[in-house]
Length: 485
Ligand code: NAD
Image (cartoon, rainbow, N blue to C red):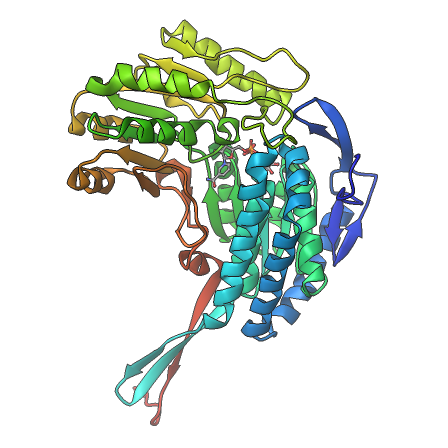
């Protein structure tokens, strides 16, 4: 690779880079040009063993470290990450193809927010005293042990930090496997944690495809698995973890609704729909891809949206003027092209985009379909690309019923000027993350995660602590212990 921040080997184990060229080659492709920019090797059984053994050793030491010191390490890592934001953002852009305009504000920054937040609350993670008259119970919040994180390819730095920060704050160690499509950024997170003072082995990164993930999940020394990925992968990983009664967090896919009432501020609603569909070229799990627009505002909405799409700048992602990047891979581009073809075949009206851009790399235009009905494939399946579907509706009740008629439940949004309606609608959404007159905000202070097939557990916020620790309760008898005989 042509720039200074390139990681020096495939894996990061026991506080240093580790290579084992016996593992299968994984080509790292820059999505904006299709060029190979690096090669990593999948972890061999030897590398997996070294990572889990290192994590086990580090965890014992880390759990015995004072929570204040643990927090200090995370806070220091947050600071280093923020100081290196530019270089890390360039790396993230090479890894994913997302424009630098986005990565400068959404990736290492969001990762450092998580490290800072969980670093800040590490020493506040206390138990309870429960009085029972003369006797009493106290609780101790304990770590789970060695945890495994498995990432998707859309936010490689953020996903690594959203899992590592609360896990480490609670006294766990982690072995993290990035997506094989974007293997580079998590290595930098590992490097920074070491530099910030984390003991060797506390956060390890191993590369590989699903089978490396599978080997990590089934290892009996692993206490918990946190996956960010698709629903089919989630089912497999959850089942494997369940067979050994492991803890899980599942951050999976979605087909989220965005409901726009005709009293909404038009420009604000159009901005919401753009943020809900075209950020990261549509490769966001919580995207509001089913945009229900009340009939009275529909034509005005479509006209304004088409106008605003002219502002999409598709150029060199490293040029900060570019605001719309390529698909992450040839495969993802072809999947999305398949959905665009299905949308046309099944009778949706293409009102914008729909084409591949004729240049190297994996570029698709931002695409809008109108007159989409609930039974069409593009309204039912997660596309994970820049395809916005507009569905018409008449009444509030109808919109809510149709919004909820999906196996998914990750996110949902509503645009209206009627404050009572906004809360009434949100109260009825079957979704983990909801937005009123906004879309896709994900501050670390707010719990993030889905209901129904979209997942189990929550990331971020104080809620994450419950998913990365367990409570021991201790009954203390003050008098003599009596028995029946
Ligand atoms: P994916 O399910 O194909 O892969 C996710 C990860 O799981 C990869 O690292 C992959 O190597 C690994 N994996 C695959 N099979 C495995 C197995 N049998 N055992 C263990 N690990 C295995 O998903 P993707 O294509 O990388 O990402 C896109 C999907 O992720 C979309 O469905 C999207 O909605 C979802 N996603 C969810 C969130 C969220 O927070 N809810 C965030 C980003 C992406």
